Length: 130
Image 1 (cartoon, rainbow, N blue to C red):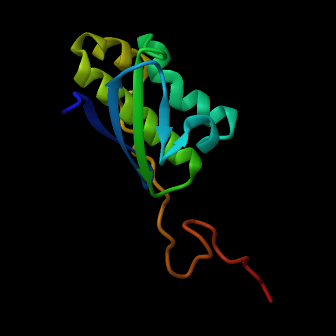
Image 2 (image 1 turned 180 degrees about the vertical axis):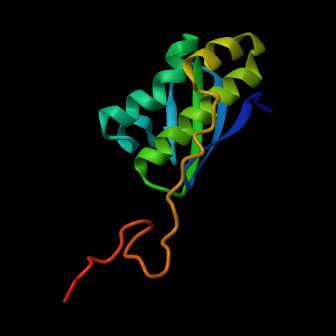
């Protein structure tokens, strides 16, 4: 028995999320945990659920997510990006809704590398006159 699903990959900072959407009753599982248990901060939970709410599909789809890399907030952004891409793959009419919400745009901001002679990417050692 094969189950039809829509698949997409979402990315944010160094986090990658593989998202699968199945027809169902609204169960969301992230790394084998319920979404409320994985994303405990309300801000991250709102970020994750925003594309589904914009599409009006919160209780019409079951979702399984495998997310790796980065921190919790980066992972939340990656999951949201994956949700948006998978929803557009499922129904092309949702593209304008996802684009208007800014969910399809890949946020390319990454941590800047540390430079030699500096303490961090841009912070220089304190100047001493004597």
